[in-house]
Amino acid sequence: MVDLQRDASTKDDSARQTAQTYAIRQEAKSISTPSFSRLLTFLFAAACGMAVATIYFAHPLLDNIANDFGMTHSSIGIVITVTQICYALGLFLLVPLGDLFNRRRLILAHMVLMVFALLGVGFSSSGVLLFVSLAVVGLLAVVTQTLVSYAASLTDATQRGSVVGFVTSGVVIGILLARSFAGIITDLAGWRSVYLVAAFLTLAISMFLYGKLPDDERKKERLSYLQLLRSTIALYAQERLLRIRSMLALLIFMAFSILWTSLVLPLHAAPFSLSHSAIGAFGLAGVAGAIAAARAGKLADRGFGQRTTGIALLLLLLSWWPIYSLDFSLWALAAGIILLDLAVQAVHVTNQSLIFSVRPEARSRITASYMIFYSIGSASGSIASTSMYGYAGWYGVCLLGASVSAAALLFWGLTLRESRHR
Image (cartoon, rainbow, N blue to C red; front, side):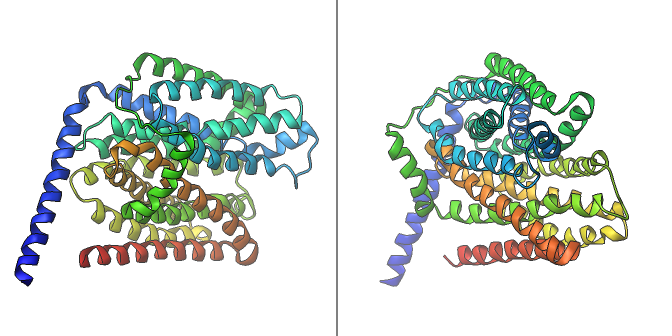
């Protein structure tokens, strides 16, 4: 009797795997892979980088903005808060719309509206107009995630990880270079010019997207908007892989934010006393790591997603040792930054490659669900990092980052063991 049950269970597993393989093949046949050229891949990455950079421009400009509008330094921080809160709202309220509407039109509409919002910031004449414009910028910057999920839909299962990896690298590069870009432009022509130049670049990218972006020909979901939002939340209960990968996203981006939020504090203080431009140069080291990690998507395509995750999380933990060596060597710090960004991006790319294979018809909602945890991790990492630096200095920051990284590695190990025992 037991043998018969085992045989039935084996047959069920075999049938399930056959059905999944058939579904992947059918999806690959239904998509015109050649239409997603290298030029289009680069265009997607550039659009993602530009969109996400808009919510980070203000970080090095707070002093300039405060002086221009007569705000106190204690209250100007709300500029960052407003933008981040609206970005989180956009993840939940706007990104899932990609499962209801034509994503080509949705992306172009968001990009064009972003141009007007950036112009609103650049020409703002009052604090109210500034905050409203920045709020709209934060809300629309989630077009980045619509682009990523659309890129995943335009590629077959054998190439999805590679394409997602390259497009996602644009996001990380945009985050890392936003501060340097804003600082250089501000030195040349003032802080308002940062947003005016960004508006021009966004418009230029929008025009390229209009000419090159493939049409969205897939069958749309027939849901009301409220049903769409409910189903976004329900995905957490329905998809175990999404829950695991979302928690990993929360932990790795908490570690990422712990480093980048506090890094300016010891570098700007004695004995280093580095300028903002010099500090921004460390972002270039992070870019090198992010670019290298784009290959993680190819490994996920070949079935090495779990192995890539484990190795990357171990590197993330080890990266805090050279980062802690800041007092002894800036070169060691740069090496640690490369290692940390490589690890974070590798896990992030692998996460997205895996979750996009779960529910092809709900990729926009899956993206929204996943990225909400990313936002939670980033925000909590920033708050914890500055608090820890004030309490225990750079040693405390590194200890906190290493602890979060160790927790991520432990969590992955436990879930991997549980999966094998299932």
